[in-house]
Length: 137
Image 1 (cartoon, rainbow, N blue to C red):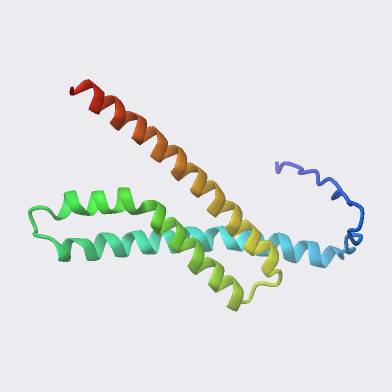
Image 2 (cartoon, rainbow, N blue to C red; image 1 turned 135 degrees about the vertical axis):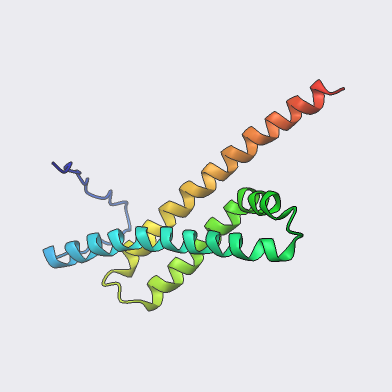
């Protein structure tokens, strides 16, 4: 069974125009566009990660290839996520999405959550490195 999601009416502040009424078809197009945006993002991220895994070993000696590839992917993942978001957003702009706003909003939310996760990960890693540096003195 699917879950029902309630949508509250937007707040109208003084001086703001009233929200536009949308037909059922427009709402369905928005939902479909947002649903199609998510796999697009993940496909872009997977393709970029795979390309990084394929190209990086050719730039290093065979002996170091696995270690360097793992480090590049692990440390470069936030950059790959941003690049995947940008490419997905550009595809949404030129692709056959009936509601580009809903699809773009979905990519924006994924990007925001990835950014927040990256900041939290960097903070945890920084604290861990600080503890290790203090412990080694």
